[in-house]
Amino acid sequence: MRIVVVNNFFPPRVGGSSHLADALARGYAERGHDVLVVTASYGDAPAREVRDGLRIVRLPSVSLPETRLAVSFDISFASRPSLGRRLAALLDDFRPDVIHQHGQFFDLTWATGMYARRHQVPVLLSVHTRLENPKAHYHGVFRVLDATMVKPALRVSQPRVVVMDVLMDEYIKGRYKGAYRGLDYIPVGVDPAWTAGGDGSAARAALGLDPQVPMILSLGHVIPLRDRVALVEAMPDVLAEFPDAKLVVVGKVYYDAFEQRADELGIRSSVISVGAIPKAQVPDFLAAADVESHEQGIGLGTATLEAMAAGVPVVAPAREDNFPTIPLRNREDLWFVPPGDVAALGSALREVLRDRVRGRAVGANAQAVVHESFSLEHVLDQHLDVLEKMVADRG
Image (cartoon, rainbow, N blue to C red; front, side, top):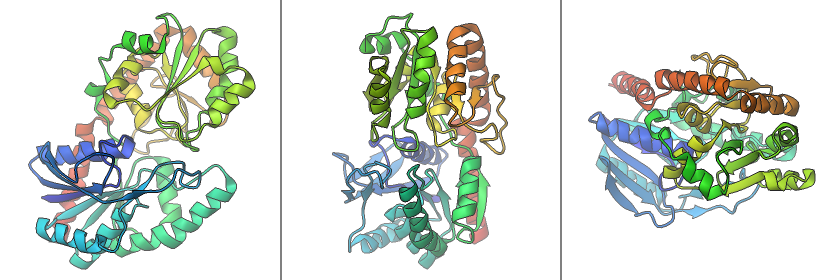
């Protein structure tokens, strides 16, 4: 097949959708398919690049200012008068059999969707982010944007949509009903081998932490939907039993409410903000951690699965039915706590830190689950099954 992978976010930019789009694109190429990646320019990355069997084209873009309305992300958009013409020339030359888009609210998704409609090319869309914000007035704005801009854009190409978890299932059915051809339930994929084998001592040395200091890792960018405020509010309960414990937040801080809350509670010295780090260093921090926890908009995402793949016990403010097709057992594969329940979160964190043997056993169970159901190879197989069927149906 000739597959176009579309995502405004793509390496060297870091992030869950960026890494998954890259991993799937490389997987398609390794399986013998011809792959073109269309993305937005980012930093000093070359406008055109060939690597790992991929032809990558980065179109000129501008970044929106970082605002809370934009979920505090520096989002790059490639829209300009010449975009349609440049895309048409690029895709006409490539002659795609199918287009795999990532992200429903990006201009490259909408532009390639219009091309697909004109040329009758089937489209698969992976929805990575729900347009939601905990602030009520912002939440209302996002609902309007979904109804007036995103849904009409999706109606143009009528994609099949990849559903990664139960929250996304409810969101897609609620916001975009009638704008897609069908739903395919495929979880997010991770590379289990990549996450393991880190040097925990190196990460602890960089943080200035002794080996015996209890370390709670919180992995992933900090945005309003993953603001870490509940974790900070649970820390006084943890510190009462483990006074030298540290909460280590690894990821770019777009939203600093958790730091302000730590100041208010007088525990700022127990909260370490590392910021964004190179992907190659993530396994070191996973190896250093005694437990991992972060809010994922009450769901489980890539960072959670990467921690599980590394054998790190996870405490997750999430629903136990997070993955519709993959059951996860509370206190056997990870610890589930009710979203927003700070007392339960603190209790679960203390339980893991108190019983390290149990924690390692749960971490080992989690590793097995990830290898069986969330490995990139398994997820790649499912994507290719869907893409091949779409191309066959078109023929």
